[in-house]
Image (cartoon, rainbow, N blue to C red):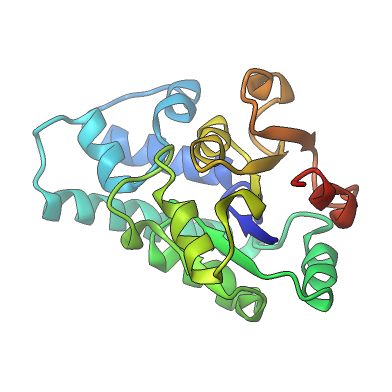
Length: 217
């Protein structure tokens, strides 16, 4: 068995900072979106998001530059607020002490992953970290979770995924994995039709890890 964590919105409660960052960046390039529209459309790899919103307008190098602008702004804004979601430090310690392998499968770029893992000094918990630069296809394609499981050396159906978004929950479904949803950004009712979801929680403090892992059997 193994645990796979999404990062943004799951390990750290940062999605509203990301959404406002996208809103500001897209407006600078002529696309005015409401916060609700940003939440509905800005998910997955950054270069894919930009191509989806500006089809054919920007080269890959230009999309990467826009992505860098957005993420640099996000990191500067979020650093003073950076912390793990409640209950996650204790869950990570419990899993490590029990010898349960753990990995991260995120759509975030490497710079944002390093920003979280190194500023919070939690890299040692994870034996596998797969980010946007490591995959060809972003979520909801299951490639990111498959690569984490492969690096951990565990079967796909023995992985428990922690996610925060419907797209992430569908990624777990497409990977043949069960998911627990942390409702930092999305409401519980948004996951009612996604069969990979075994539970929705406001944070990690109420999770009995060993009881949750029994749901995988």
